[in-house]
Image (cartoon, rainbow, N blue to C red; front, side, top):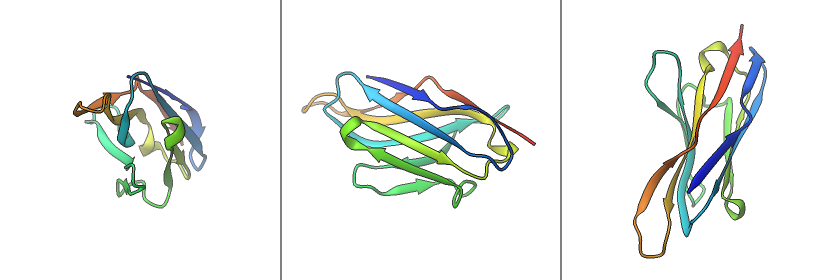
Length: 120
């Protein structure tokens, strides 16, 4: 299973970016998909997740600014990031909880990370 993320870049404070992440490979079912981030000197933290039933979870720091959405047919998750500020600067990692076969357990998979830099 591979997760390919895209959409990072450099943006000024107050601007917007949209991240995308597509899962491919041997996939029977995906439970949750989401985004985590790791800023300089920080541990990786949850940004937002979306489970297969559509329930979403957001970090308090991004509530009201970020929106996670998902295209189940395409095994793709999106993160619309608005009103960005310098504290959002980090490497953003896509995550998926995937069942590869009907009889297998779910396992965690991670994308390669995409850099988001917000200038003041």
